[in-house]
Length: 612
Ligand code: G6P
Image (cartoon, rainbow, N blue to C red; front, side, top):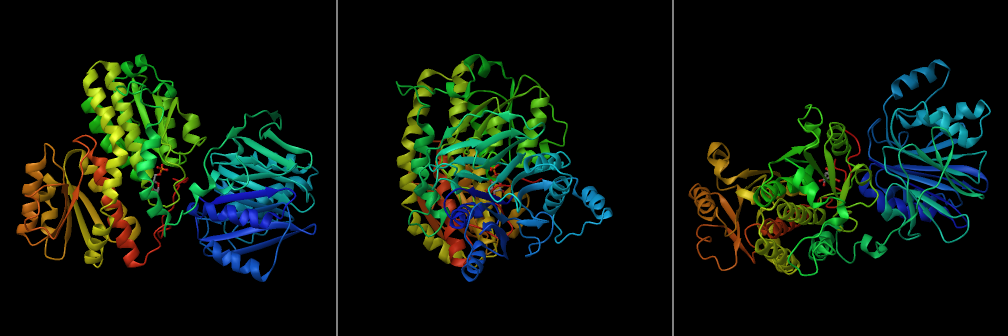
């Protein structure tokens, strides 16, 4: 977790780094700090709490200069405190770090035995000590960094300054994301954990790979192999995201903005993936051919959190349309189970960030056993996309709200595209059916707009029930994962306990919870499960539960006994999960706003979980 930013160049780097950190606050927000070369001397400013605390400190102790490095923290080693906040300074070496030094206990003991004293409880501080030792031994700054990193096991994205090298910034990467950007002015370089931090300044970037570092100074920006210091030539990429896309765009919260972006985002996901005749799906960009789609005997979908819920819906589609046996596994479970996969298995890794440690480790495990990896991912150049055999980007644009929304619906679109492509290649999906599904996909943006028009009604429902202590969400079939996702959204941002349950399973437990205080969300689309879900709904009504039903526009049967009903324009049996997901996101959002929680940065959660 954590976000790092660094700047070197002709302008004052403090506002540059502070603005970058603000864009990365989603990566962690329990403390923050910066280090800057001001008038040739290295100065630090750190603070516990959100970035605004640091901003206040900076107002009191004006700081300006270049180079500058900064950090926004999500604690892993050492509780949130000023002493544990980054940057960490030891004998003129100052470091910001995202990741975990796995062998830090052994290194700390070794350094302590040699008389080193530590000013924090962090693993990071070890790195500044190791570098200082190498400098003492007479190595130049880049060599000292390389030699120190050779001793570090674990994950890091680092930005480093040294008081004797006021014109140099070094950054390095191992298993934590790091992007380098090239400014327009000569000698102007930026580093950051993620693209939104850099967008305001540059579009010209290089995504560092594991084991790579950059040395930026007046002579330029060199990319080196950490192992032997050899210089590497890396291809630059141009980022097309608009900086305005990465801001709140007039909405009160990023989450609300991102909920409302879904019609557009889903449209973007489809761009270039539908054949010209609008009757077929074209996924050649993944590098997977029709022969590839045919050769897999099994699909295993691996993900965490909301991405896992998308995978659960994907199973219905892959099995239904492509007739390929599909399992969906939580990454942290899969990776420790010695899973049964081989070269006839397609692993689909779903991750908004492309940096979730468990997902990456699980896919690596599967890959070692010979499986092919197809990534569904939102972040260009992320670790997942670089380890996968093929990638289908969600093209949702930056998602800043910790609770995932547009990433989820665009992941669903990708899964449907894969199911159709696979079904077509394997011969089970007739041309007419493919054309119908393509047509359904292309109608989604309009239907999602319509679903969002229900926002005022959903807000009213939230107002009515926001004092509830528990919520139950019921659905069947491909909408059952949407019930799980609705419950997760509510838990994440409003801190109300919520459970998603298959409606048919209610009688085996949750029915005991029902009383006049329990709001029960029931998803009642007009599909093959309708009558059965309606019976379940009535079972709740009969026990005085407060039913909030979501059903098809024009339904006259559903309302009886319900506390509230939301009517939605449907997208057809298979694609309805996308339509039904949106009002549940809104219900969670408005409930959280009414409860006054921190919607975009809920307590204890982080957007990108880069630790186990
Ligand atoms: C965290 C986030 C969730 C997200 C999950 C998986 O828990 O708070 O919103 O669904 O990680 O993240 P990924 O980037 O792999 O989709």
